[in-house]
Amino acid sequence: MTTEPSPRVCRMSRRTMLAGTGAAGAVALTAAACTAAPKPQDALRGQVVAQTTDVPEGGGLLVIDAKLVITQPEPGKFQAFSATCTHGGCTVQEVTTEILCLCHHSKFGLDGEVLQGPAVDPLEPFEVRVEGTDIILV
Image (cartoon, rainbow, N blue to C red; front, side, top):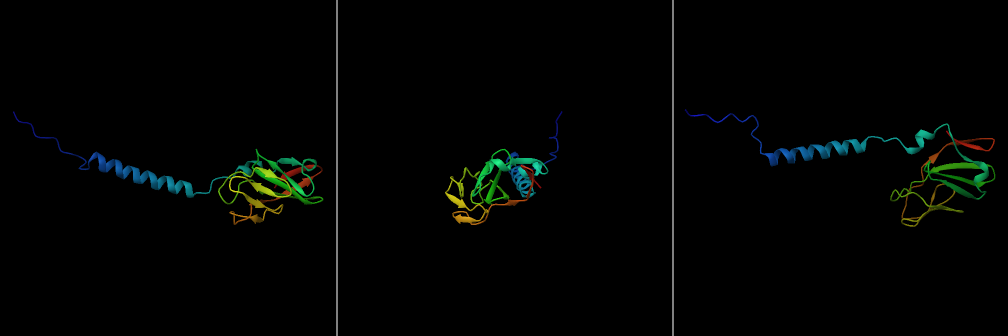
């Protein structure tokens, strides 16, 4: 009694199949990375992110949990910016009379504009409103 070999359903080698799967996975990951991911600040819209009493005039406050920098460049004028440096994506670490990213030494003004590179783009602005002493992310 002779047995015939069973027909092969797939005539692709394991190596070829795995290489194709890897390429398809890379394409899927790339496509997923290109979709707009929610920003950490999106979850905080409509919420109090700081108190006016915590933001010095002519300076600012870094709100780590909200990934925000709140500034008060002139009395009673409050602004908010992303705390993510536009150069390398580091979180800015210090706010004095300037916003400083110590990763690569970029400096931003209290208006979010670049004062010193390597960053070339300003910090992303966010709208805030003040109610009493509450600073609310709009």
